[in-house]
Each structure stands twice: as structure tokens, then as C-alpha cells.
Image 1 (cartoon, one colour):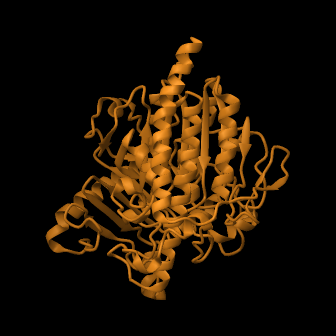
Image 2 (cartoon, rainbow, N blue to C red):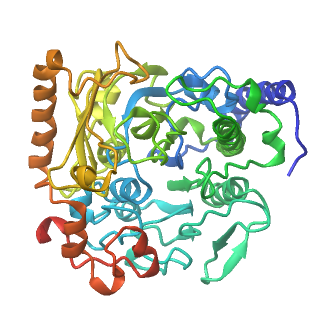
Image 3 (cartoon, helix red, strand yellow):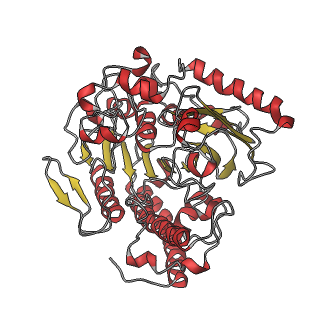
Length: 508
């Protein structure tokens, strides 16, 4: 890794790299014309997603102090969605939704460390594989269930990504001395570098090896996720760019030394991802693939970073947890713009398949928004559902409002007996209160609005046959007892295999 540099030096390098990209595009195009070779007409897909990066942790979404010049430049060439929502803002639920196109009640991804059901598709990777795409997956997986420290065997639990699959399943070790992955023989190998840098180099090697044929590449970074507890340590080449004492924090969190340290580390990790992302984009340019490659930059969910006095990092209806960046570039078909089309994680698989001209499986439960994206119909969606099973809350997100309610008999209803936990119920008007600092849930003057949004939320529940069974009962009825532990909590799943008796919707 490189030594620490100043903010000015980093930005100067970024501007220089941007100029190189512009030149690289024309050179690649000229080389292709000279060779007289046409690239495959089907678009490639490069899907890059970080872990725990809220929409507001990129410069292109209005953050004036974070250093992400490469992603910001990429966004200027792309469609930048202002309302992308992680329907279930937690790691395994998001990944299960993305890879299957199904609600957690159908694919099994109700909470971290449950095993996503195989053979209930076809799933995203299976559709792409069967269409002749070369498949590559690099980085965090976290849908195999149970014990995180084990490789994913070839076969049905890779969901179509068997060809090139280099993953560490799920680990919270990102540094050059401990970060690892499982190789093609199922042996643990050390990266020897900051995890996202090494994973990106693996992805670049995949592009080199498959540049002459259609490919689908998924790159799943674990940072800027905290390492466990409050460890937000970043590598030296970017950590020096942020002074905790000079940062402006979100206005909805307490200003403490601990919070400032966390913000600085989190932002520095975001900058490291920006750096790695540029390497991958330059590789596409070098190979002359940028024009006909659909590139996505997004995240599985956000990080509260102590906003709204929540001690945990995710799983909340507030936008710091559920609203994520979603940037989509395809120069051959899409004009750069900002879009306020509502899109949820459930819609990603069908929409991307639609853009690629591939049939969307009937098992997909999201909406294929490809036509809306191509025709710039940003009013095509009225709302997207929010659901969080281990927290026993449900809700709905519209362009203006966020609404959530606690399930009867669920987690928050126990507060009167135990003194905890804090209820999730909320109603925010983000147009007048963009940082969601005024909860209108109990306000009499907003009762009609609350009822309207409640009807939308319960309509979404009805669509997915979600009867609102409290999570403790869900665990008892859905998870195989030997893999659950004795206390029927999500944490105990890490000790077993996370296997399910069957589809939760059928068991509940």
C-alpha cells in the first residue's frame, strides 16, 4: 500500500486519472475501429456494491467533505438515482433479495446467517449463466448461512456463479495481514493487502480473461462496514485525508469524540473504495468495453453512525439505514442525468435483466423498471415496501415520506415489560424535514396521512403474504432447531448452518 498523502495530492491524482480515462476512451474506440472487430452486442454487467454505505457518503449525493472524485466523475456519466431503497436494510436480506429477486419470505433471507434457499429460481446468476454470460463473483457472500468461517462449495449454493468465485463468505478482517478468501480448491488464502484493493485486482484479472465474450461481474466489498464494535480503521493511504476534529457531522447525531473518530474512519474507507473503483473502470476503458457495459455502483444498506440516537448501525426505517446510492452507467443506451424514480432492492434483478434484454423469471417479485429507466418516466412508482423481520417492523417509502410501524406482539411491544427496546414507529416528511428530525407518528394533525401510509404498507404485506408473525415465532417455525441454538436469536445462527425447513411463506 502507498504512504499517506494529502487531500490536495489525492484530488490532483484523481483529476489526472480522469483525463487519462477520457483519452483512454478515444484510444480504445480507435483501436477497435482499426481492428475492424465489433464487440459483443449483448451488454456486459459490472455490479459493484459496498457494505453499509449510505447515499449521503458520496460527493455526488451532496456530501461536500468526503473525497470520492472517481465515483463522482462516474456519476456525471450515468443515471444517478436519488431514491434507491434497501427494502430490508441488513446484509443477508439485501443479498438474498438481490440474487434471487424474491422477498425474504420466499427466498429465506429473513435475517443475517440464514441460508438462502437453492433451486427456487431461476436466480439472477443462473439467468445470466444460462444466457451464455461468463460469471465472476468476488468478495463478501453471506447467504450460505450459519458459520461464516467456511468456503461456499461449488454447486447450487453459488446460485449460478460457479465459473469464477473468490469469496471469503463473511468476515470482519479487512487489513493486509488478516484479510483472506477461499480459492478455487477451497483453501484459505491471504490477500496481502487492504481487502477491497485485492478484490478489485481479482476482478480486473477476470475482465482481462473474459474481454472477448459477454460477462457478468459482481464485486462485493465489505468496507466501509465497521470491523466489529466501533472499529472504523482505514488504510494509511486514505486515513490521513480526514481530521476528525474538522468534520461536519450529520445534524441528527450527538457530537462526541467517539462519533467523530467513527465518521473519519468511515469516510476514509469510502475513499479507499473510490480509489479501487477507478482501477476497475480504467480496466474497462483499456479493454474498449466501457460503451457497452452496464456498470452499477450501490450498497446493501447504510450506516446510522449514531444518527437518531440508535446504537446499532442498520435495520432502521430512517434513511441513513435504508437509502443507498444507486448509479447506473450504460453509455450505449442511457443519457447522464439525475433520476428520482423510486427503486427498491427487489426491483434490481428484474430491472437489470430487462435492460439486458433477458427474460425476467416469473419467480421475480420486484418490478422490471427497464422501460421506465430508458424512457425517463420517473413517476412510474408510487412507493416501495420496507420490512425488517428481526426488528418486528414494517413500513413504506415514498418520494416524500417514510413510514414504519411496530408489529403487535413483536419486539417493541415488549418495551413496557422490559424497559427496552426502543419502538421503530415513525412518520417523516423528508420534504420539510430532510434529516428526519421530527417524528410525526403521534401528531394528531397528521393522522390522516399516517393512515394512508399505513394502508400502503399493509397492502405491500398482503402482496407478499406477510401476516406479521413476530420474529421469535418465525425462528421457531422456520429454522431447523439443531441449527438455531437454544435461545432462538439471530446471533445463535452463526454457530450452525442456518438451514431452513422450507420457504418461510409456506411455514407461516
